Length: 118
Length: 110
Image (cartoon, rainbow over the protein chains, first blue to last red):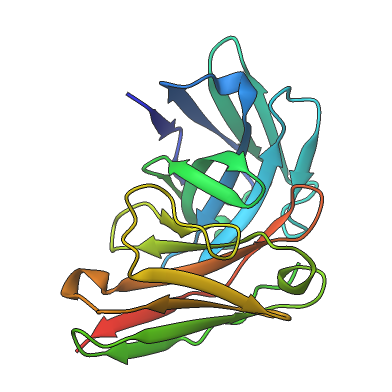
């Protein structure tokens, strides 16, 4: 079955770190760029970061640059998002998505909730 | 990387048509033919319904159509059905693997 499954979310204190994972199955993971999109409670979707299929090139939204690090392990079919210096405004559902082509995200995970609170 | 501008809400009766606009700049919507639209039902992941301005993925009804003029893209839903009630987001390529989403539009089927 073609799917993406995120994990790693949870409750974390301000200033803490968290690593999210997204495990892919049913397609050739290394052939596709992968993306993280987040959605704060009651808010809209926000593109966060994309990594190319090889993992050599990464791209970030200005709002997370220097704080978030995207990476992937193609041998494990897994995408990661390391979030440092967590702030309340990072509270959101984090989705991973397969970037099928430019601007086209056909496959999404179910999302993992990150809550930043003391 | 400013969010694209969408109306906060639109509404229509079953069988009617509604159009949702998505306004950006010549650095995103106006600069590329890579505008996509996503439908999001409560507590569900977003679903792609339009890509490359006007193309529909397999399985998406032809009641959903997309277009673009200048810096503004539009999603039209014809023959509204109750299950179309959802949030809709536009998304545009902005160069170098960077994407930008709209703020989202809540569609109410009256």
